[in-house]
Image (cartoon, rainbow, N blue to C red; front, side, top):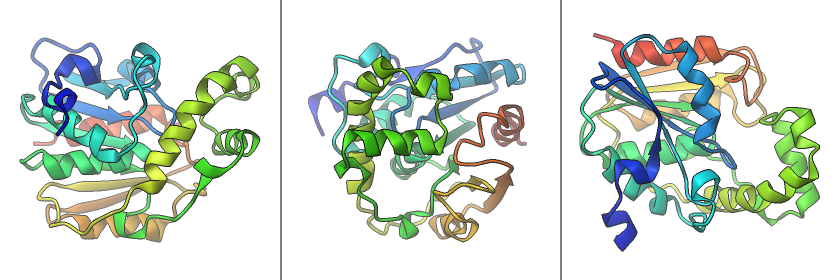
Length: 246
């Protein structure tokens, strides 16, 4: 473990405003190229008493001066340490690349937590891709195709130049990650997908069932890879129900 990982704190890795004593917490892990700010609009849809925390990966936003991670463990280990002191109930939600990182955190956290994974095949069915090796135009075209940015923003050259190194680093991290079979999680797993998502089929998402002995559910929403943007209110409501379930 690196010295930075050993010193990981809540403030290093987690962003969000919450009640002094929430009844439970939803911890969100962004997609490739994403930051904690992606989840800020979710606060408007939270029920009273639910805490929302979003992970801030290095290399972006207020951590722009830090190098991007090169290995999933470089993120999962310190994030796990940052979450260790948070009381239950705790739900980890990860979208796309964030699902992989949230899964690795759930494996390490040492107690049953609910894991909600979005837009990602089960670990054993991960697709082998190499987008990080493509040229800038091709990689940015992939970002635009998946729909994570409004067209008027994606067309800005300044934004493209700022984001491309981050996106490439995240794709490299994700595409080089090798899943090693491990004992199934003791907590519940919920797989969430858009019905027109080119990144994952219903059968691929169902493979998450083999990663847990704590119960499995699969939910499908109308939309593409970023279905969770137009369906934000429904997605947040469903996740809040997982946190606050009796």
